[in-house]
Amino acid sequence: MVDGTIPNFSIESKTILNFFFSSFCLIFTFTLKNKAMAISKPFNLNKWIEDNRDKLKPPVGNKNLYVDADDYIVMVVAGPNARKDYHYNETEELFYQLEGHIQVIIQEDGERKVMELGPGDMYLHPGKVPHSPARGDNSIGLVIERKRAGTGYTDGLLWFCDNCNHKIHEVYFELFDVEKDFLPHFKNFYNSEALRTCDKCGTVMKTDPRFIGD
Image (cartoon, rainbow, N blue to C red; front, top):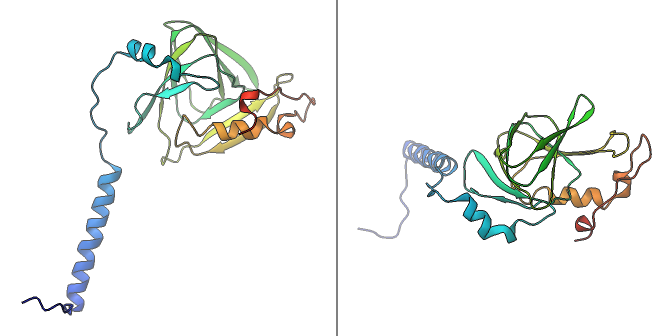
């Protein structure tokens, strides 16, 4: 009969209960972390682009197509963009150009080099090489890259002087949301003349009003 009293468990019973409770917590946590992404139905990418052009706005203009994916970020990115930074990613990135043109400007062995892509062109960018995608008017491309949050990989943003190509600023961080995490770093850089001033030749990088203020 239930009389409302609390059972007096032995030490052995308490040890067993603690073991089962701890095991349950570990299994529950593991299950949450390893829950597979729900299977998505195929869709027509060209139609999606036509229906969502208004969401692809500068200064970055990217949209993650599979937010709940476990392994990959699959983005549609439109131009023009206002970015002058170089992105540092420790993993590879695949660029496939759908409409218009893009220049993927890279820094290799201290030199500025340009990769030109037009409609139908594809480029696999190696990891750990700073790159700056400069997208033209009415351009749309597909970019595929690995998710890095919780993996130990580091992302970075670097700026190089327009005049002498000297590195003037860099910042590194863990990337959680590719649509949001870059913007605070953009605003911090473009709102600071000190950060935008080259300490080698004195050139001040021009800012963009879209990154100024709140």
